[in-house]
Image (cartoon, rainbow, N blue to C red; front, side, top):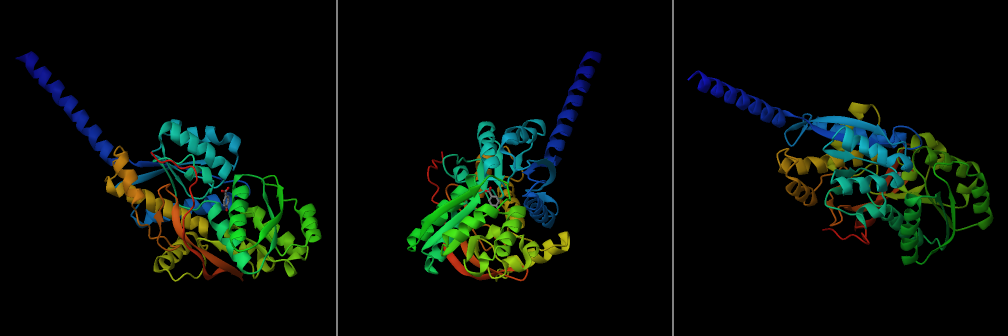
Length: 390
Ligand code: PHB
């Protein structure tokens, strides 16, 4: 009898422990790992993405899919050679449920490889590397931003339609710049123009003088430049200081002036660029987003903040469908795939390669705003060459 009572007590204790564990499981937080640049030329972009993401979570009362969120952070320094180690810090050391990152295309390719190998859920809130939603596409990899091809293609089309026949391109020599120029070339060609010279310098160098001299000597109808963050501020200022902006229009994807306009000042005024976001959109969601963002962070949001916000919205759609149970991966993925994201940029859906299908706007730099000028290409989908989604 005594023995039986002991056994019963032990069984009850185990049951209580199990119950506590299940309770803890239900209560435990979703671990979100930010792998973003917090230093270097893209630091402001990383911060804006994190701010945007957190703003959406805050608006949901701090929870997605009914579970609180716990954040982990790694500064990737926009350094591809450190990307695998940095990704492993989040995946293996911190054991996160999802990684949100990053800005730089070279870094994101290494991240996508680790995500594929470990089946980690990855939401890319900027980096436009075509491979990630091309040959490397996978059920567990999503993007809330763009491919480098998308704004490039739109700008090429607009530049051609505006009469640019011979264009010089200039960019940092890495995947993002190369792909942006490829998109531009394709768009320009469709409108009767051609790229006559491609100038490059290593990322993140900002010694532009010799290249500006070469542009002046070539006398093209226009220049197309891919730079972003601190590098974009310096390039636009140097272009104007060399007097080139008076005779040769400077075009680019909107990264050239988005989030950088205040620092560029007079040098950027009147520049036309193409992007999936603009100031002055008549999108009700955008008005609320801008008011909330400005209140929370005491600065105006930019495209990077929007992409961070939408990364959280996408993850939220997936988690809501499985009530926060991340082990139901297939249902979570299906819910994100089918989501209709009410973005501040305007509503978008995802392509079969998990990249936004979206309007690309033409915007015009005026004082501190990239004013909406019209839709350059409606509902543009990346061609997703090489994506074979299983
Ligand atoms: C990229 O590396 O893919 C990249 C970086 C900054 C941007 C856009 C694209 O603003």
